[in-house]
Length: 168
Image (cartoon, helix red, strand yellow):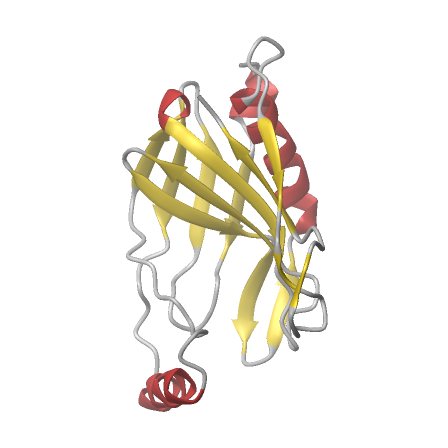
């Protein structure tokens, strides 16, 4: 890996329940610092519980966060998706799965209620460098189109909303 790729970092905060996480491309691993659960106000937790009762299939996931190291050789799946919400319409996400755990990188940064900062300026080059690192020319990846909910949220369609690379 070259020095430019290893210097790339991306920082974002998913929501009110998480602290900011900083991701870095290392020489042999993807590394995360931060991202622990935040001390959110009581009304935020009450709203989260209320939403889980109304829509149990959705909900705001609170990840354990903390320092983590994902060796490139151990990463088994990289899922890139466009995942907008009503208040965060530019949100993209990357789910990383490996033998040592999983993590999610977000393209937007939570700054307040219904207020998200677009961090595409660091997210896009970071994701390109990560995908090049995981998929050298001698190791092709398998792209898997999604089958799931349609863009309007009703029924099932073959609309590609995410791309997943299964490595190994």
